[in-house]
Image (cartoon, rainbow, N blue to C red; front, side):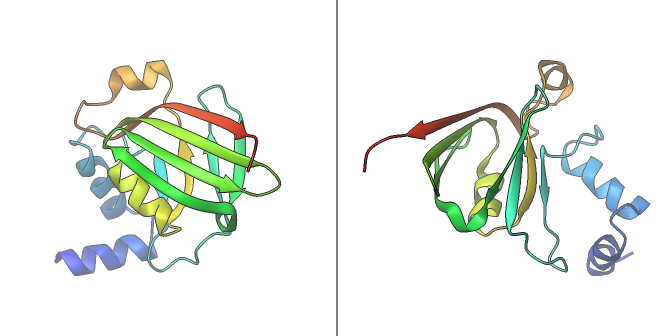
Length: 140
């Protein structure tokens, strides 16, 4: 099957074997997908993105409140949100450049912090979110 036909099949049927095999091959064949859910080109862009902590807590933020996405290193992404409060969210981990690119273009539905047990099973060359720290900022 050609690459373009495979991409089309994956977009139409996200749970098809073609789509699932691509996710497992993307991370070294270990079957563990990236810790974020990107929006496919055929899907409507979401109004909000969700952050799920390892302890299970989930918070959603509006993309319209997202002001900057900073990626000072491949293992760190800093989000600045300005809504009713100013919030800085620091995401730490491995291989997070793609996450920063997707967030800056509004193409992420959910991102999940990996548990310590998950981190044990994720290959070093695979992306992982090890920490998520949210800070409420004061002042101008």
